[in-house]
Length: 181
Length: 105
Length: 153
Image 1: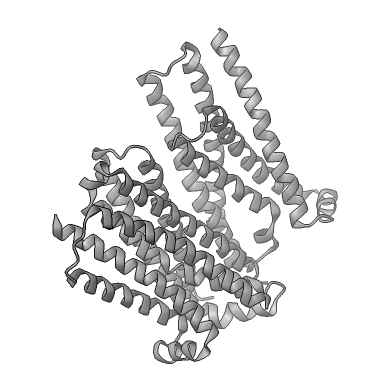
Image 2: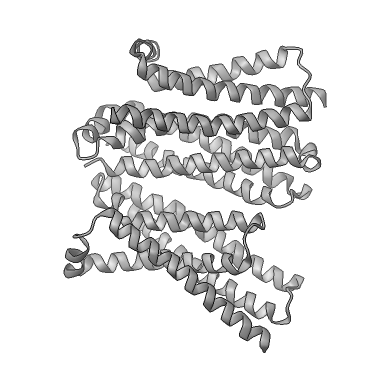
């Protein structure tokens, strides 16, 4: 296994585990908030999924740059480095990191923090998974090559913001259902 | 306690001096090319020269500010930390603006 | 590119990212109430962050001086994206020089000033703000590295 393959494999594993941890975090949170409060045992569970997400994020960042370094060493600079999908992914990761800072500083409500966290994990995962698939389908490659970096990035960012807003509504609805029960 | 305060005080002063030096040498070496040539001649490469000189400025200013009879207290240290933070931001923006201007002109 | 230069390039990236990660850990933990039991965590994170930046400085400097200037820079300048060097590389190589000094200040604050940090919220906030600035500058540098590498065609 070469350097590129090792980074790709670890990147995919960390992405899957990260997405599952983020989902588990939300499920556990809704289960725990049913009685209106989170006790010490429940908080301990949430800290485990939270730590898992942190470690997955660290591995994702390191292997993400590792993949680019490996591509650079093998092929030099390629279109990948200037791909709008890659840069929107970075934006999503930066939003995720900033979200964590705001949560720590208690400057953001959990309603928005949860949505941003969950949406960011799924959106980044989808961008990574789909961009690979799209590159294999010729008519999609031809379609998207009509648009420049700014247009594609703009629509991806709009999609991301819309996904966060939709996620807020979904999570609020689920929370109301759980508390009613 | 007094010694700890003075060490911290001198390290922060040294960092402030190093940051100012990096900004000044970066801009001046690009505007006044003999400075860049001097750095290349003495240190074989201008960036090596800037790295070594900024480290030297840090050490020299650190030692000087430790030896000076300055009374260091929490309030002064707090103020210096704020100055360092602001200088990093201003220095970052200055270097950004300078190279964008140099490229576009 | 010979193996040693490839090794130095990858090390430069890896240590730079580690430095950012360590100071991000300091930032996140420091925003919450600093816990006296976490003294080891803060000291080690800051120290390893500082050392990572120094190692990134040395390995990056080696690659830059021995290879980038002669082999990579002419390719970028002659290519489609010359601004990748004239703007981004020039900015990157100079603002990087801020990081080791700022990182050392934060590290020494945790080693020499620990007792005062919890008692003085203003100084604690200044140290956390400094960590945030180190993380932001580090992140900007990392992203600029991608722009520069992408221009080597």
